[in-house]
Image: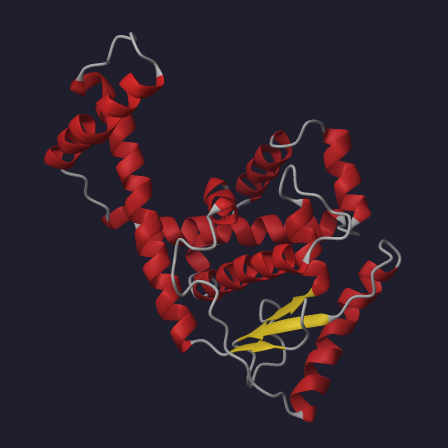
Length: 250
């Protein structure tokens, strides 16, 4: 779940092609198919929120009539915002909605690949742990529940979202973490060039840990940085190959 939050917090300019969207016209038949698939979402959300739901975009939806992760709705945007601590839910700006849309597109591109690997399906314990971790990011359980109610996010839908997020985490670990190699030279270079200067700048006079003491933390930092770089490259490539269709402006 931490990597989802890192994706959420990543600045819009960190990848030149991150927010480049494809546009296309939808045929009447495809629109009708998507509308049929979307009816259940409208029913669930109608009683819990005042905003009328609408279809915002599709991701690789051509020829698929039962692809639950191909359609992105306005509710999906609100649910994503609600699960981000300190994010204002009242009247989100167009910029905020579009940043959220692009984040969800990235998540869906990864999720579509993850679902090709049944072996990484989350266990009930993993989903419970991820949900508990998510709740801890908020000031209280009551505030967390209030945010969910405000955007019509039911417990069932929350579990579905968490299931998807755990799949994304496990897929990225399977795809990238297992192949990351951090050398001792990389750790030593980071220690001298970044770790020590940064520590001395932030806390003058503090005793600087030795290279041996700092190595585990540095290795973790470099590992996560490499995974993020590999993930960015994967998403750039996935976007180039994907059919991303904008249905409604936000």
